[in-house]
Image (cartoon, one colour):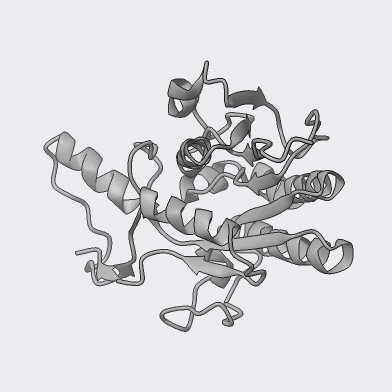
Amino acid sequence: MNSVRRPKTLVTGGAGFLGSHLCDRLIQEGHYVICMDNLITGNMDNIAHLIGNDNFKFIKHNVTEYIYVEGYLDYVLHFASPASPIDYQNLPIQTLKVGSLGTHKTLGLAKAKGAKFLLASTSEVYGDPLVHPQSEDYWGNVNPVGPRGVYDEAKRFAEAMTMAYHRYHGVETRIARIFNTYGPRMRPNDGRVVSNFINQALRGEPLTVYGDGSQTRSFCYVSDMVEGIWRLLNSDVVEPINLGNPQEMTVK
């Protein structure tokens, strides 16, 4: 009996900003990683350094359709989704489908394989919050039919589906509510404030601040976020967990 079998992990959205860093970390931790991405917002450049690695495999696939993975599987990390406002406003149907159908398919795979499942959720489940900062027991203030509703509701549904599979089918699940994250491999034109500022600085242009700049953000460096995800994956916490930098700063 092989008691030192290498853990095998599927990362959906693994060619994205956060997903690709997660692939790196999992390989570093001794996992065999299957990266699955349909590349509508992911980029092969993010995983180019992993192609040819014996512990890495890339599959181009849309996870809203049936997912086949040969052999055993220990972990399923569902990170596939458009994640920036520009993306989910340009891809509203795809955003809703990957949060609903994609979550259903990946949970079904985790159930079939007896794998632990981790959902990449978002601070956007709180909508336009009336409470600052938000704790995990806050239910949010969400407009389901507003322009951000496609992302907010996709992730809220994904959380509900994840908890249903945990309670009804006994799947071991984790939910990470991810807050603002930045670092290498961010898409230059994703419309977020860090990307905007860096692009403008590189072009020698004035930095554009919307409003009076008093709005606050908490920015978490990507390696810290990946560390949080890794610790959550290895914890016994089933309820959703906020992951991010607790120190807020004004945009100005």
